Length: 439
Image (cartoon, rainbow, N blue to C red):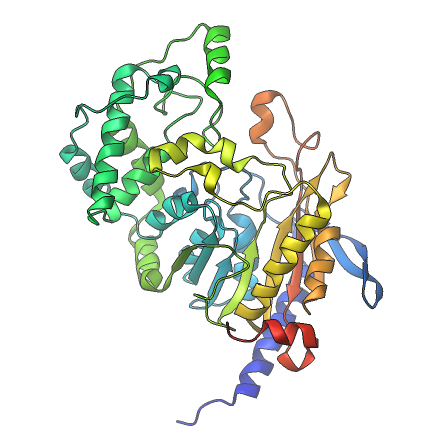
């Protein structure tokens, strides 16, 4: 059978992508049309205006996606955000990439939708959180493995952590940590061990009895020792005894709640094709040029989140010195733009002609800085075509609600997504052609 000419495939893909953009423009939420506007920025060719649509593009309800997503991480978006773009801009089997994967929302949602997922993050904690959920074990396998771990194993206790934990709870945490480290050093760490480590990392601290710790901040950040002492004193609380294995099993059961046979079959079909990298997103030679169909991502918003400070306790448990992880955390907007331009240059290389980028940012500095206006010149600089800005505006419960910060008052309150497309190679500027060379 004769093969289809590449030009015909390219034309067909272009037509599908044009249809997807038309569908987004015509989108209605419960019958409500999008509010239309423009986002204007200065480019090398002069001032340009990008169509901007404001609406509620996905549900504001919490826990409305697959239960595998339910782990905590700072500044992560809802699974419905990547699903919105994956459904419209890709087909099953195509490649979806997130260069700032964090807890892996895009990667996991792509896998659940039968796409090949690629994820990258400079923080090694991300791979620990993401990889186990792409190939989840059975609850029976988790229970059986927990039964083999000697949680009463005597190990040196870091006494300073008793501000968070009952002594016996800390003993069990340290025994589990020693077991996992020994398995890793002997190259015996398997999928069940990785799952148990991922769940334990997410149970270290929190504000309910489902966590190993006494009452503290939500589980996506760990307080300093001194701050926790103040909370304990103010609340007149003493760390209670927790059963580490029982809590890991309970959370595993919750995470696996949506994993029926159909879900597991979908994950298994693409399991060997997924790729998880711990690297800078501006330099990913492991990803073949022109191999990615869609990028859905969200970078650090300047220095808004202290990822290293929030994750110091998780880092301790996993043997990671978070101070040594060189994250893209900058205060000045021009420095952030330079870093993002470097990332876009690499995305131009890995993205196929006609492929799209959905780049989610937000408003920072009390709403004075709208990052979509800052990121548009970065994409334009490397030859990407900006097609739309989507602003998802809705009421939802913020993590900061525990400090009395309600939605639309402080912090980041909207998803602001810039949609770029990579043009055909012949239409890229000379500067972009240089970046497209295989490294």
